[in-house]
Length: 404
Image (cartoon, rainbow, N blue to C red; front, side):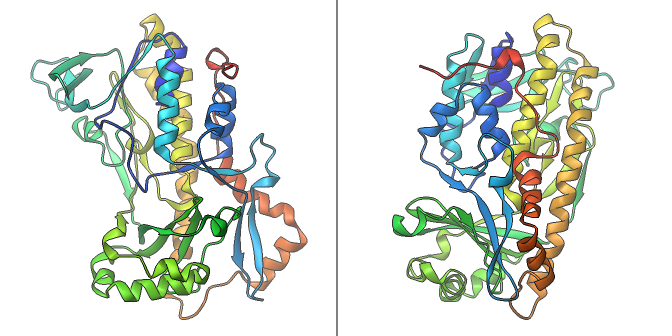
């Protein structure tokens, strides 16, 4: 959506395809980071975003070994116009981008239109043939099957990308020690509305991250990889007791949680070693599946979209798009992808230590003391998480003043 909106503003005819009739999917990335909020400013969309119900997370805190909380990440220390992480439903964010796109004469969005395959330059239609080029996509929509030709196909169809698979793009995968249980706890708004800090709970068997969302809490429980069946077999009461112990202020809400309402996220971490082939480019999770650690997946995907639009608008508009242009997008975005995934893998090692610990895990005294004495250090993680390794500014030709 970001790539399509910016390309359209750059004078490129864009068609965005969405297989569903709406964007309503629960437990998907709802974090809008400071650099993405700055992008919305530049695109003239921040006033519209402010109308979306959202919560502002300003700090991340943990318990220290002395039993007191310590701030490990303070987004207020960022030199950004919006020094916080906005927690907003992704469907609202996507609807905002869709509406912005509809105001552009070069932008078209088709809902209920699924991509069923790629079109190839060779009549046999195979990625295995030497020199085969992607010339568009096969779709299935409300009016039936349709082949759509394109100068460039951008695949943003997620971590299980069917386009990536058909194009036979090579990938590397990394072992991941955890999966995530997602669930929501209904809680009085008075309890959650004022929570400007994230406070991960690591005092129980499985770390729990409660995320304030107004009148409810969206919670993530980290569980060992592939342990979902065994943990479900322990029953609802065991789960409720653990949640109540981790989040005692919402113990009553935990008693209403049913196992059927707990959704499993099968965590994957991988990246393509080549994001493109002739007239095809993968971005976002289709190019690099991220761990949920830090909630950075949306931010990195947005930055991919901005970079792709900025670098490809002119050759697409002029009809001179070639493999070198797509390869240049990968070169620009590969370094931040590698470093972000390396950071996440480091956090994974810490999660393993939590899984194997026999007691509560706390921030060591020396680290807590250092963070309290030198609070500027609490701005390091926000820079990595909230801004990213290589933030991508909006091109001048895509910027707009706010709507009247």
